[in-house]
Length: 500
Image (cartoon, rainbow, N blue to C red; front, top):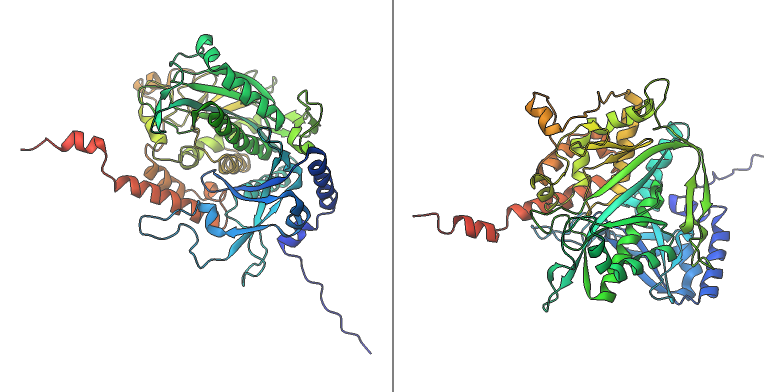
């Protein structure tokens, strides 16, 4: 007699994620941190299509339950629950189900401005009761997408992985009696130590909070717009760098509240002065290992992964002296070729707002407008800023870092697989080279044009798999249409008295 046996059910992505062998130990470690640090409340957070931090707060007593079951909130949170100009919720309607956000225990960290509170990043999934793909990865989760895209890239290229750092410029603005911005907190003098000193209390508080949350701050300066600072932290693996940029923004917003200022991440609040850029310095590596940087803290106020940095290994962007003492190595040149090939579509992600293009139109302020590359050449969209890395310049302070890193990885992947040649580096001022007859492609000069370029580029669209591209395009197309459908002071000033 043959006994029928049932075929074992395949775990959903959600169930498999919760069942990871190391996860149970991590959950216990977090409980130890909660008890040792006196944590009473936890923010469970993920990142929306625009880079906004979204989620829920839960008393710490429920940690184990939330670690297993997650939190639920509407799918539309991925699009900030924004209503488009036709009255529809972007991405997901009110009839849609609720996503499940499962906390990643290794990102648990105490908030230094209130030691009773901690935060933890989450990975998002489709609801368990969905009729189609229940418990699958939610493809509108930009952070989860980056992790998976990067893992696939490493698998396809023998462990090759992206490490990058960002240069997050932002402005500290005074707050008027009405609560709105009232000019910069300092004067627009680039590298001026006296203006930097004027914001010293703010800077030191930001650095204090950054160190407490694992950001190894390395250098900073006063830039050339009112109240504009650039405070940099150490580069690392792509996901951790994106998490740290998101955390840095949270920290700046908190410090602004404490000092009665406004932390302005808008790309171009002032015309005729430099914008808030967020250059990405990128390189591809093999090997290396994670090392904990305790940052002088007596006790790590969170899980060790917050304080870990990938060190060592081989930087494939370094020049090969046998080939050329200055140019990046072959993989580096292929990667540059990939970015040059797809720079038009990448611009929709790096310059993702209507305001972003004020930066590109305000001439004479070093904003990148053309798809070319060089060494220390700030007139190009890419420059080799130092041996072993290049600086991607068509990106500003409003960027969603997870989408940007995913798109750069896809451009690199295409450049390597197709052996794309970026051509010779431009060492002249690019504007003068063009006057001499050089033909160079121009970046899109409006959000509408950039979205069109993105819609035509399947490689960069693949950085937003599943529902991600649909949500991004819907959100950003609506933003562009709302702008076009709005009358401004400029319209009135320009046309009110033009006739008769």
